Length: 148
Length: 254
Image 1 (cartoon, rainbow over the protein chains, first blue to last red):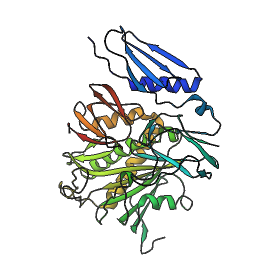
Image 2: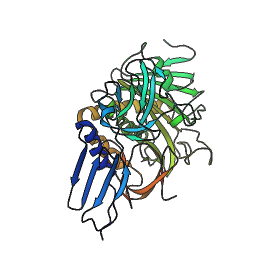
Image 3: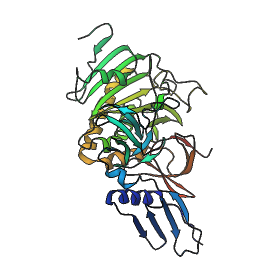
Image 4: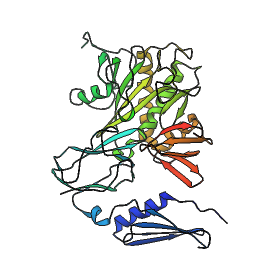
């Protein structure tokens, strides 16, 4: 029996594509693997093909819903990296849902390879949604926060 | 203008670069931010003999007694801008490796992902970058005469004097500016590929098991197989390939 490994990168790319295209479902198949990423169920299925090998493994889809990505107030990741919701471990978060922010205010940090980048509010408004969790890896262009 | 706290280095520097030497400041990264308007553009480097609140990754203190090098350099992240700014982490690591080889040729330097330099397995420097769009401030600390005693820091440390090389902060600072200018030019002309190759040549532990401790305290373990096109550390674990973008890396299984 061949061992199936989870290709999280492939799933992430498919989920990002899902967000960008507005599709509900993408299925990608190679000789050894079939990955289906569907939006409604908010899970990604990785199944070995032939399906007899192992039970499907379900992991949470990392992408946010496409409607958030298309929201005019969506603030998107300017670089790949890991999200930090507070300036230092243990300190208060930069923002909370419902809070008012002013243009230029820091919303969160993204770290990639020891490069720290503050993501700033492009305009003033109210935080309608926070689409990422502390320590979560994000891809370029992934929606992070919605400001209304 | 030279003052009691500030003088300008007369060491040979790349065209347009400035090296300012301070007796004391809070943090050289903060010092560079404050000079954004008064001395704009790429190539401003500030050295402090002492830092009163030197910082490491995620708010960690960087103890900064006199004798070591504390330097921050402003680089322009364009043309790539923020999406490729993290590649400057490796530009800085390669440039510092080259500079140390100039001033201390017999000291063997290796690099631990992404940009900690090691001598015989012990950490000799730390590099932290902060974006100040469109610029990136590269903060570098090099242990020249002092390093944290065993147990005090997250990772075992050493210093250049202990490794048999006596180098002044200003000498290393100037060598670093020269190599950083050259490596940044290489990156602008050739993209990440030549920097990635240079980094992989000095990388410690390729093909070996490493442990990456993530922000949430969890650990990922696997064989260090590659550095990807973004600069992420690629580990091969029994669950497949893992791509690490932010972590503290240790060699071996833990």
